[in-house]
Image 1 (cartoon, rainbow, N blue to C red):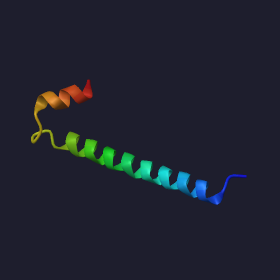
Image 2 (cartoon, rainbow, N blue to C red; image 1 turned 90 degrees about the vertical axis):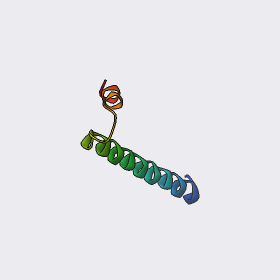
Image 3 (cartoon, rainbow, N blue to C red; image 1 turned 180 degrees about the horizontal axis):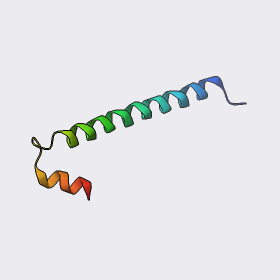
Length: 48
């Protein structure tokens, strides 16, 4: 039986990773939705 401390820590890491992925998805969506502010070369490089 794992100790409650380790399970709590693993749950914290899962939540932290989920938040990081959410922020990353928002940043990518923001980059794609505003192509006029970004250089075209970087956007075409991302979509490759």
